[in-house]
Each structure stands twice: as structure tokens, then as C-alpha cells.
Image (tube, rainbow, N blue to C red; front, top):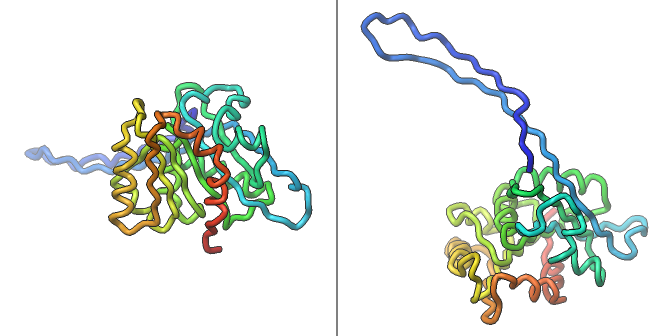
Length: 235
């Protein structure tokens, strides 16, 4: 995500003239803003054109390998791949990071605001998921706005365990491959453990035969989408 600081205003109060003192009093004031550019692709379900229906939505955050400036990369993995090859009964939303960038929760939430305002989405059935680097982004966005999401699924990733209890009201499913040699299993397990300790609604799955690419099995399984649809947040 490209960041540009647009405005910066500084006001400093001159310290009093104290001949024998080294004490300085001052005030710092700043106005900061930034421009966000985040291309995305949307897959609409069959029957979307029917009037009067609001659809469940999946917001998917990709891993490091799908960064770039080619939106076709987004269909390599996860719900976008399933939506493109077989179809899903969801609006699937997938933003794409430029090369070298990482996810920022505020940008993800701002994008969701824009898409929800433009499409027929049931705001009580918006699901957030991410794999690898995208799992970190999904945690960040969900922790920043836990009431926005009906459920959270993270695969082969982790987040900030010190803040994960903010998700105790969000049904959360955490999946990790036992043979993951990129992100340690313990990183994912610690998120689940912390959430369990604060009495969150958490499901932990350790895939014994999977490595870092545990996501292919997870997202290809129809039961994953049934799990999403089993959850709805309060309006």
C-alpha cells in the first residue's frame, strides 16, 4: 500500500526565557493524512442480478506471492480461485497489494466500506479470511473493527497475541499445517490459546500432513463455506 503524507502542521510554543533553567515547555500539533491505492477484484455469485436480495460476502486477503499489478494473480488461491473455477454463493472481494507492501487494517476496512456501499451485500454476513501474510492482515483488520465481521478464518499465519482478545466476540477459526516451515505452528497456536483463555469462540485446526500451503485443502472444502454461513452477526 502506497502511503503519501499530505499535510503536516507543526506549532511550537517558544520556551520562556529562563536564564538559569534548562527546562523547555513546548507543544507539538500535527495533522496527518495519507492516500491509499488498493486495486481489487469482485466475483459476483450466480443469480446476483435478482432484485431485492442481499448476499453474504467474503473479504479475502492474499499472501505475499500474489502482490503486484496483475489482478489475475488473485485467483491463484483461496475463495477467489473457487469463485472463478466453480462459483460460490457469496460476493467475493479480493484487494491486491503492490509489490513489497504489507496489509494495513484501516485500508482494508475503508475498501470494505466502499464495496458495501456499492453492492447488494448483507452486512450481517460479511466474513474475513486471509492466508499467510494475508492472515496477519485479517487479524489486524478484525481487531480494529471486530463488530464488522460475522466470522474470521485465518490460515498459515498469525497476528498480535496481545490484542487477540478483542476478537472474543467473533467466531474465529485458525488453521495451520503441522509441517509449515515458513510460519511456525506455535505462532498460530498461540493466537488460538490466547483467544481460548479470554473465552473467545475459537476453533483450532492443526493439519498433520500439510505444510505452509494448508490453505488449498481448507478453501477447496465445501464445509469451510458452510462454516461461514453458520454465522451471522447482530444487525
